[in-house]
Structures are given as C-alpha cells and as structure tokens.
Amino acid sequence: MSGFDNFNTDFYQSSYSVDDQNQGGYAYSNSEDPYNKPYGQYDYSQPMGYANPGLMQPPQAYTGQIYQPTPAFTPASSQSMYSSGFEDEPPLLEELGINFDHIWQKTLTVLHPLKAADGSIMNETDLAGPMVFCLAFGATLLLAGKIQFGYVYGISAIGCLGMYCLLNLMSMTGVSFGCVASVLGYCLLPMILLSGFGVLFSLQGVMGILITGAIIGWCSFSASKIFISALAMDGQQLLVAYPCALLYGVFALISVF
Image (cartoon, rainbow, N blue to C red; front, side, top):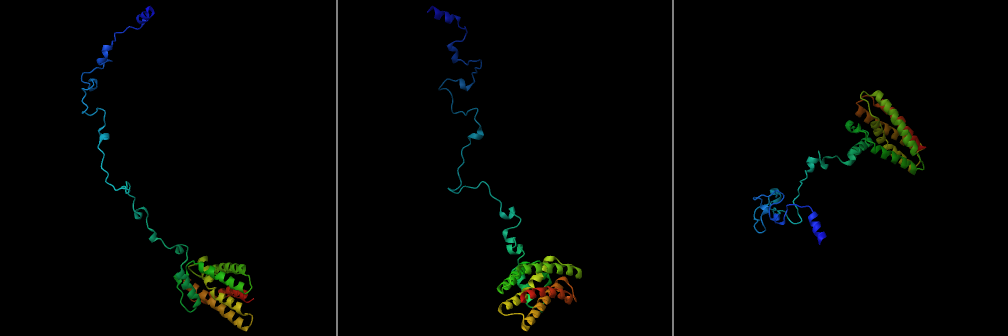
C-alpha cells in the first residue's frame, strides 16, 4: 500500500474538487443562463434560442387533386414559341415545285394549240410533267421494240441547251434554262401519240408520213406559242417555231425508224 500512497502523492496536485461540478465550471458560469438550471426547473415552453423561425412554419394544406398535381411550370403556347403554325406552311408538293393544277393547265395548252397561253404559268420552272412525258415517250418506243431512252434524254438536253441560247439572243427579257426545258418537255406530249400509233401500225407509208408531219407541226406550234406569250416576243412566232420543228423532227425520226 506504500507504493499506492506514493503514487497519489507523486500525482499532479490541483485545487479541483468534485463539489465544483455543481457550479458553472470553466469560468463561464452565468446565473442567467437557462441551461445551468437543474433538471426539472427548466421552462420547456420557451422556444429554443438557436431555432430559425423560417424553418418552423406550419405545413400548408394540399389544394390539388389526387393523381392530378398542380403544374409548377406552365408552358408557353405554340403560337408564341413559333412564328407560324403548321397551318400556315405550304403543302409538301408545292414546296417541291409540283403543282397539279398548273401541270393540268399546261397540258391543256399543249393539247389545244389555238388556246391562249398564260404567260405567268408558262414562265415557271416545272420539270415534273416533262420528266413524266419523257418516260412515257421512251415507254411507247419500248413497246414498239425500240430501246431509245439514252437518245431521248441526250437529244432533249442538247435541244434545250440550243433553244436556251437562241431565246436569250432573240428576247429582251431573257429566259432560264429550266423554263426552256419545261416548255419543250410539255410540248413533247403529241410525240407520245405518234409513238403510240407506231406500236399499232407502221409509220413508214404515206399515211404515216402525213401523221408525222402533222405531229411535228403541232409540237412546234404549241412550243412557239408558249415561248411568245411568256417572253413577250410578238411577231416572232415563226422564227421560234422553226428551231422547235427541227428538234421535234429528230424525235419523229426515232419514232418512225
């Protein structure tokens, strides 16, 4: 026991005692501090000093419906998000340059050579009808045993280029290559009838030569009439009809022979 007594005497001596626990230790005692009150004397009805009033608000009642929550964001209308709706957009065929009404009017103008041509419609670049007529012309030649699709498209391209240069030299306003190709393609429609006749009977006789001449005149007269009305070339129809007759004469030779 002497060793234990020596251990207590050798330990660090301080003035701290157990009785000091009931006092406000660490030199921070304050008689007004509510947290130093003994158990059972503290007033719990008072709010805590560190509580945030904004976080202790009572919950609000839910005003929405079940399975139908109130949207927090109301999207803007489509009219405000976009400058124009889908109703204001043109049809897809019109955006592609395909107008069946104009195609029908141009076809009737070609089929009726004495009908006055509408220059505003004929001045459009419409290649849907000419492509169909070129395919129909090649198909009728194919029915007659003549595979001439390459010649049809080759002669068409060379003829359109020649007429484009000629009309730009003769007219004051000028013309686009697409307009020339559109007019010459539409006026190929009577030549389809000639190739269709060639499927049924031979065109190398006298009757075939007369029909071929009439078809060439029909095509060239319709093309020159349209060019005159679209380019305001009054009094020059015969000058325009002559190169058109040369072009359609080549197509007639393919149909006959």
